[in-house]
Image (cartoon, rainbow, N blue to C red):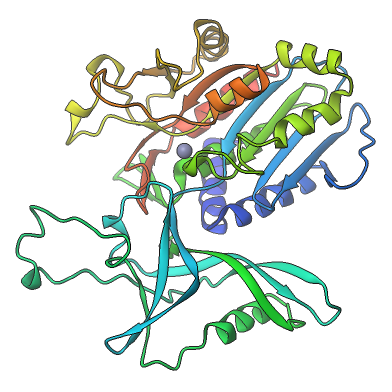
Length: 419
Ligand code: ZN
């Protein structure tokens, strides 16, 4: 696959995946098309060597793996979730002549970029059907149905000096004038539009607002890609394509987990049992499982902060990654990243054999360091781990920015691990 096709596919994946549920569904479709066999956690697994499989949990996390006789797996980890605004269970607010959504921030989002965006809604809806069964369906409204209008500068003259945003009172999007809007009818119509007719009662939902602006190239030479959810659908896309491309005789596993942005402590998060339980079912007894863990490498791929050209002092000058200058290896002496000299060397060895550039990131010593699924998985499983990422600006904005070269470079390196 050439870089252009790779990036076109990335833009499509980003637009089709407004929530972790949709990202998981899209990856599952991709794996099924690539010959992976679907497994269900509630049924007995009878795995055959030489075949390849995938399994989902909570519709929002997914694992795909090849199953050769070798046990020295290259595992690639990423996360499906991104910071956003989620609807509260009783989401309808009415005041001053309009209907608004009551929202709860999910993860550490930048609030300001959410103002004045044409927002749509997507996620999972659970309902009772006429056979008395509880069912779920994914909806994606697609149309712009809500917006968080800024307060005019005339009503807040100091806004450019001291804008702060109150998460409870300032970010409720407006969706209609008057007060006739009926949320249940709206959801039933959306379900109907997805072919779901048999809805007796709506029970619960997990719905997120998202920006309707499509992912796009930006820059006079298309050097950048701008989109929502680059953190971390970018890594999901690279991991997904890598395992779909490699020879199934090579041991590789890809996991994309939900809930990284809120600490990973959930059934479908990296702190949960999903990966361990899958690996134990793959390898059976504890001896074989332990040998596999200690022979394998986890590459935890999550976005990295490129040095911002307007705020260069926010980076350590010697560890300030640039956009389109290659994959970033993340290091933290206090184990906020799981990379160590051995795991870094394995990655450098492949990158260098392919002439792919790499960069190093260490956060400034006087600033706190973020973390990711790498240390969580390393601690839980005891697997040698490396934290890497693709350089981005504006992480956790509603529109993030990455380079149009770096993801393709990571793809080539990941394929190199199976050579
Ligand atoms: Zn991330």
